[in-house]
Image (cartoon, rainbow over all chains, first blue to last red; front, side, top):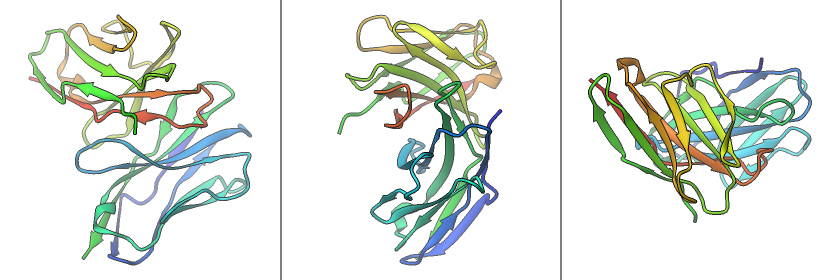
Length: 115
Length: 115
């Protein structure tokens, strides 16, 4: 079974600086999707960025980018120019395309932005 | 931008009572999901639904749970006899494709409190 691990329960960063959130996963599959979701205090789940495993190029969405290392099964999220509105829980999630289609979630990382 | 709408935002119910959580997925989406998040814990998959039937369900989704798409727009989760441990945030999500490339769109959640 697939698992997703986020080893950082909490991270803090100074406003305007860059922070990287870690995510590793375990799978025997070759094709899958990876996602980062943001959950602000309102608790809504917001898609930040996604990556298809068959694409070597790292996904980028404005200030958010990933470092996808397929061989290492690593999928870290880099947030550049951190803003106060980035403060939230960040969840890494995995989705298989071969066997089932549910999202498998990491435990989350709480990101604190220091003004 | 299209949204997934969930109602109510917060529901308090007595143990043993039935509750129905409602969701209106994005209109052209075909795949629907329920997840739950117990406070301080991982997000957990409950069930996926396609073509008016359950396509996958987790061990959590036992006989006390059921899902329905009663008209062409609503997607409901019913919990027949609530238990204290059902207290959680329940998220509805929908996607256009089962393969997951588009990611899910989540609703803002229903906070269920069982007393």
